[in-house]
Length: 233
Image 1 (tube, helix red, strand yellow):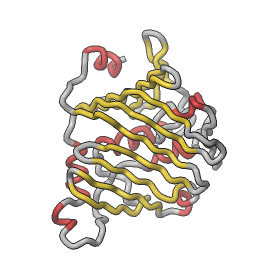
Image 2 (cartoon, helix red, strand yellow):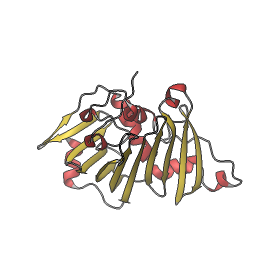
Image 3 (cartoon, helix red, strand yellow):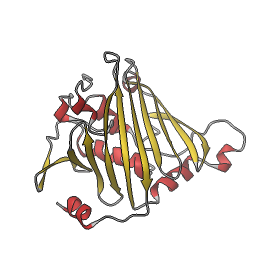
């Protein structure tokens, strides 16, 4: 199995956990592999600080992230490559809907809309959506990527050691890989947030890193008619 990183600005467009076929990434590249494993499963590894488990534990974090039906926000993704002096940066907006999936609306460095669901990744093409080739991880990867933002409580602890610190308004979840295969890709994954996820950081063994920041997120706004139409197509 080979792991290759996207080397163009387009490669910074999709979420760090999602395979970017447009950027020439291999089907089982680092981004796709992350998608296939990341879901904040929440069964029980808490930092050994007295009273922390009682104050705010992994089950409470999962319940908290699972509450919103719809989340709107902005994102900034920075891909730091050892060979480049400046990160590859992409910006845009997102819509996360518990029942449907994720709309990832890239604004810069180019404009392109993506829809990510358990069925795969689709790209907007005019007035319709075109499914991208499912060469990579398929539905399971995308389902687990969505799970990290939605608070799905399955699948993570078998692959990562979990450490939670902080409280409900300011927490950090650290993921350390268990398997040799994961250890070849990641040193550590950090997820931070409050009521919602604020950032996801991937620290890779080869020295590259990705930081995905969700900004101005709100769960107060329902899906618009246009967004419902996008998910329904």
